[in-house]
Image 1 (cartoon, rainbow over the protein chains, first blue to last red):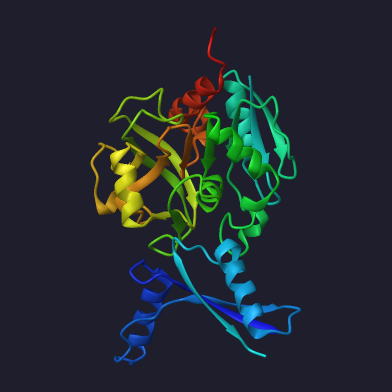
Image 2 (image 1 turned 120 degrees about the vertical axis):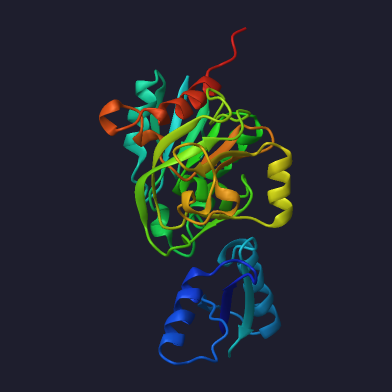
Length: 80
Length: 232
């Protein structure tokens, strides 16, 4: 089973890469871009048959290792 | 009295720390991160570098190395525990210090001497200093921008846990004197008991006149003193 984890910087925390990229997009003429935020995607292949169990297991992995709750939010999605 | 200097795969400042502690009269020995027994170690330094390649997040994987449960034990027993740069990041990931270190505000790796002001002497890092002392110490990091939830910042303030702030050479605080955008210009913090401390600048690189500054020796001297057994 493939589970995708999306990790993003907590709202309100500075995201220098996002700020600089927004500036560059605006320089290219994309004036409607209000904000850009960076994050990361982690794909976990897990030996499981029950999607709910897989989601729960990966959520636990996020709490313990994959994300840092001080600075990051995460979203877990079972892909297949 | 022995101070352990932990080596993770990717650590690269361990020999500098051992050298600096030796100059201050301490017996310092390298400890591999797989070591699960720190019996006989009186204090611990987690030195700088790129533990486990900084994969995932700085310090994220290092915190699960076997040695870290022993580091947590020493911390709980009140022994001195100091994290320098990457070591500071590891202590934050391990929950032994609050907050986290994120990318520098200017998106640049900063490698130059900076000045920091001693804000509190109630820690194993600053006990040999005076409040208001201005120290010149090299900074060498890309993720040195300290952030923490409001509640943690308030607790740090309340317990004198902010021990070093980035400042101008005259000791004044300003946005320009804050090299990496750290919240409240924080360069170093300590826990409530003062025995666990972390800082981003490298005191071990400022211990001899030939290095341009000896100010770092005063910080490490605090640690060495704290690691000495209390005379009976």
